[in-house]
Amino acid sequence: MFIIGKKPKLTSSRQEFLFTAIYIGAVLISLAVIYISYLPHSLWNDIVAFFMTLTLSPVPSIGIALPAPSNPAVHTNLFLVGFQFAIAVGIIEIIVLFLRIVFHSSISRKAETIENIVFWLGTAYLITAYLLNITVVAEWFVFWAGLLLVFGLALVVRAFILIASRR
Image (cartoon, rainbow, N blue to C red; front, side, top):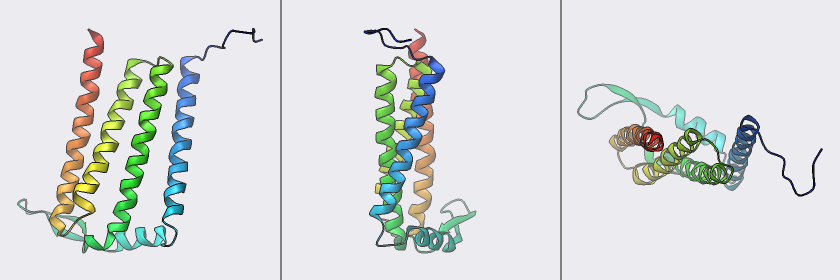
């Protein structure tokens, strides 16, 4: 029974469940908005066309071949959708971080959320830097190398936050 003037206390597991529900719902809404904004074109057909154009291309200076689109400049609209999704998820992560701070989540959950922010906003930057203006297949591989770098950076940021919190 609720007493007037007192807020019911959320347990940690219930609070995390609510954050997860908010996160998943917001991501699904973002996907729907991006899909609707892309509607003059068929997003599904563009995704299928992208995968149909993948060929084995040599990675510069390594001598091995990895999948890459045969003409990446044709897929600029699809890369723009990827950018919009990365920005949307980055913003959602910022909102989740704010909620975690307000509701006093554990430092490990806050660190995980900050790691996700670094990853998604870093991915958005890489898409604009390499894929939206792509002219040669070599930039495709630079994008993937950059994505590995951003992933590593995000892990290091999380580790530093956890180390700093241990004081």
